[in-house]
Structures are given as C-alpha cells and as structure tokens.
Image (cartoon, rainbow, N blue to C red; front, side, top):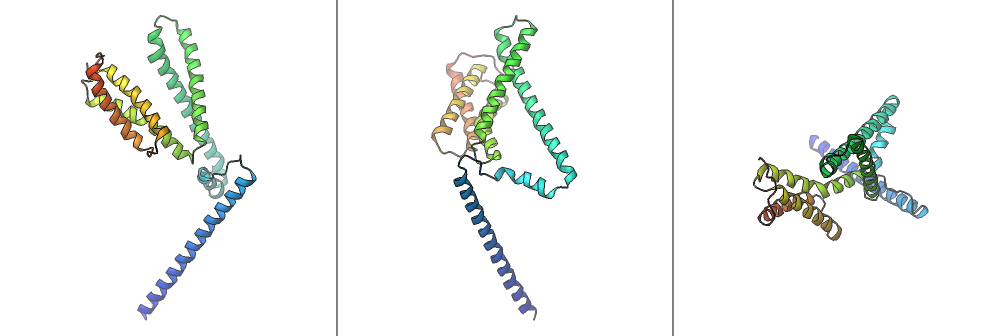
Length: 223
C-alpha cells in the first residue's frame, strides 16, 4: 500500500509540475503578445517592464503606511548620493586639475569655477542617464557603464600598490590609452562587458610597464 501511495504521489506531483510549466509558458506567451500589441499601438512608448519589479512589489504587497515612507527614503538616498557625487567631482576637478594651473587666483574665483564644474558634471550625468534608458534594464546599464571605467581605475590602484618602480607619467598615459582602447572595443566588438574590468586592469599594468621604459620618469609611488 505504501508503495502504491508513493507512486500515486509521484504521478500527482509530475502532473502538477506539468500544469505549472504549462501555465508559466502561457503567461510568457501572453506577456509577449501584450508587449507586441503595445509596441504596435504606440511605437515610441516604453514597453519594458523589467525595471518595475520592485515597484510592483511595493505597490501590491507592502502595507499602505510604509509605501510613502519608502518612497521618501528612496528619494532622499538618491538626492544625497547625486549631490555628494557632483560635489566630489567638482572639488576634484578644481583642486587637482584647475588650481595647479592657476595657483594664485582668489577663493571667490575657485568657488565660481567649482559651480560651473558641478553644472558640467551634472550635464554629463544626465547624458549617461539618457543613454542608460536605452538599455535593457537599469542593473545592466550600471554594470555596462561601470565596466567601461572600473578596469582602468583598478589597474591604476594595482600599479600604485604593487609596482612602485613605475612613475606617474607612465601610469597616466597608460590609463589614457587603456580607456581609449576600452571605448574602441565597446564600439567595435561583442565582448561581454564584464570582461572590460579584467582587460582594462591588465592593459594599464602592461602599458605602464612598457611606458616606464620610454617616457620621462615622473614622481614615483612610495617616495
């Protein structure tokens, strides 16, 4: 009897799994048909729904009183992160790039330049956001845009920590050439974007080592 009962349970479980798979397939087909119909009716409208999973969960499953609080938290975090990033970029631009070129200007002039630098970085951020809207989803957009730069930055840190005999001039030009090559690979090849992290780091290390042999030696790390 026990064997027969187990066999019946296995049959029922298999039947339930088949029904579930059939239902999921039907849902996917209906979703595809709905997106196709929507795209035909409004070609310029946005038909992607991969970025709305979290919003759907918040609106349909979270308690009413927490929805407004969560929206306020998300907006506050986004605004503070954007403000901190723009201020950091503007400060770095003025202190590291502009001020060494004009060291004798007064503080009011530097404040004015920092404001224009903030506006410039804000416009560039908007341009990146417009580009990200054309990609499949926001997570992919962040990974792609980050992978274009993370490898070069990682390579600079690796050279600074572990290749102390390489001077600043070689590292700088290696980073510039590497970044240009990464952009070229992104435009002309189908390499998976996560590989750009490894490629960028390796290129910075290699080009910095070669550049140290031919470029005038700048200040060396650790001295």
